[in-house]
Every structure is written in structure tokens, then in C-alpha cells.
Length: 116
Length: 115
Image (cartoon, rainbow over all chains, first blue to last red; front, top):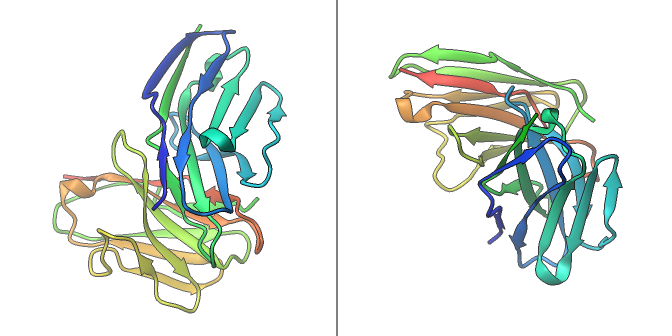
């Protein structure tokens, strides 16, 4: 069985602060995929990143960066110089790779509030 | 990435009635998924709908309550039957971006309120 844990239910920061959202996962698969999604107040789910289990390189995209550590089963997400528009619920998710399965197991989400 | 639309975007329904939610994709996709997001909660997979086969339901979801159709590679419907207030949720469809891709894209969701 797969499981994704986002221990931080809510985080509040002041604009321009850096913030890290934690994600810990459990899976028996040796090959798997990890994702981050953003859900702003409007409700749509915005794809941010996908990482496969063989690629442990950290990734940076603008103010966003992701730290994948297989040894600790973590896939943390950092926003640098946060902005009010970053306020949203962020979900970490896991997908197995066996057979044709692609369904996602989601964490409980972290509500990020960036204050002006 | 695929562009996904859902209809209706929101609805308020009475207890005991049924609502059919439509999901349209701008390209042909093999795999389509239906998720439920209850208020303040995370997303839970309802079923996987692949064209040409019966939908596969997750534990806790049954076909009589959530019948799904997948008539072609760009369209699917989810019906929420005999609704109760506990069915008030956002219902989202999603697709895998490409045949070998694991990137999954979501529709804008249908906000359902049952009174």
C-alpha cells in the first residue's frame, strides 16, 4: 500500500520569506513517481512537477525548488521569496509504475498562506 | 498538456436526485480517472475509466452509486446517484498526458452541494 504524509496542515509566512513544504512517502515499489500540485482558492489543480524514483537530482524552476531524498523517502518543496499569489493548498502525490496503473495517492495537503 | 473541461462547474441538488458530470478532453487519452475531494480534504480516487472496458472502482465506491461511462477516447461521465448531503464535494476528472507519461492533468472540477 502506498501512503503520502504531509505533516504540515497549515503554514503562514510573510511575503518574501522562504518556505518549505514537507512530503514523506511510503511505497513498496522500486519504481515510482512523485508529484506536487497547487490548488488555489479557485479550486483547480495545477501540476507543478513530476519526479521519477531514479532521478534524485534536485530541481529548480524559478522560485520553486524540489529536494528528493530517497534515503529518507522525502520529496520537499521550497518556495523562495514567497508571494501572496503563492497562497494555496499544495498537495504531494505518489504514483506507482507497475502495469498500467497511473492513479495518484495524495497527501492531505498543506494550506500555505502568504501575508503581505 | 491536455486541456480538460467539466460540466457543470457547480450545482446544488436535492437529496435523492442524481447528477451526471461530463468530462471532455481536447486530445485522445487512454486513461481517465475520477476523484472526489470532500470539503477541506484531500483527493480520493473513485475509479479508473479506460475506454473499451468497465470502470475499475476503488474500495468504498460502487458502480450503483457512481456509474461511469467512457464512450470514446475524449469523453467520460460520472453520475452521482441518489445523492445525500455527504456527497457534497468537488468531483474532478484527470487524464494522463501521453502514452508513456506519468504526468496527470486535472479538469477544473465540479462543485456539488446536496441539500
